[in-house]
Image (cartoon, rainbow, N blue to C red; front, side, top):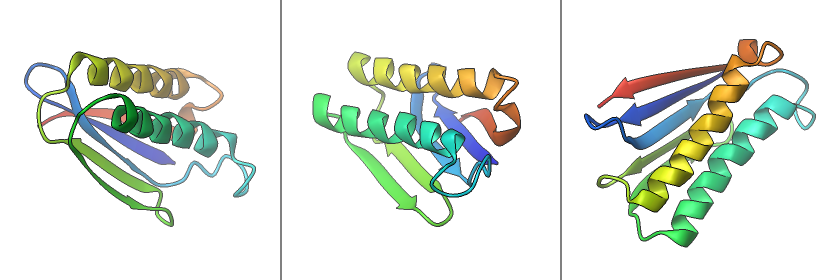
Length: 110
């Protein structure tokens, strides 16, 4: 199962997230759940890096499926939009009866 934790500040804004694990929906290279989560997360990180001036830390480990990404400050409007779009996609997967057992989405105030 993929565990995703969204870190929120006291204003309810996403200021980071961490993924861990593998979906195990199918064998490696054929796992559409793992691929979908990876695309959402990696595309969001890349878009924030390309289209905003945000400073963030990134740690990843492909073997364990861990990606830890954290902003150094409150998100700009553009970054908040991109993060909310990622969260929307993850939430839709976690709420879908076909995929709910492969992804767990949690929110944590930090």
